[in-house]
Length: 254
Image (cartoon, rainbow, N blue to C red; front, top):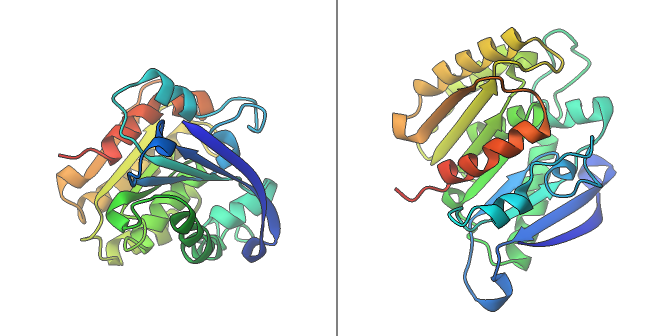
């Protein structure tokens, strides 16, 4: 893959962010258009020097090592830090810490109204919702699922890895129950059984199971994938191991 990295100012979020755009191998040698996956916490997706703890999702390595992966554009946007990240990725105020969360709609509006149109204008994407996915882990997983449930007309696919649904589970379940998900192409949800980050392994398991049950009532079986990862931890190297299968699942053609 060919990677472009640049620092931009995001007025809507009142901060600078690093934008990453990875193009499939051979992008410059063809006029082909590609599906796109938008990834949260973009600083942890590609480059070890940018990553929070020096470990990444290994996206570049995955495409070097797996010839069968679907050809997609991968767009990453770096997150805010500290509590600001929780605000930007949290669609609802946290159940136990109500001063946190609740600004995800502003973040989503920026992605839909500004970033995605700019990417579609500059690169050869397939801009339709059925060819556009959003993915993340932990709070990014919560945001990714929220984005597709709330705006399936833009993000037709979502992948939530180790989603921190427990921080505001009840309003998320209500959103799923009241949303029209007929146009959703595919949703992938997983959680490890050894997740510990802001919650216990039981918090992650129980909330992910309940979210899966809610999604089962809204989506046919072929559109929904749910996995519990044995010995799965809350760390980039774990998500890197799952990334190839996530991409295959989202962009399968059958």
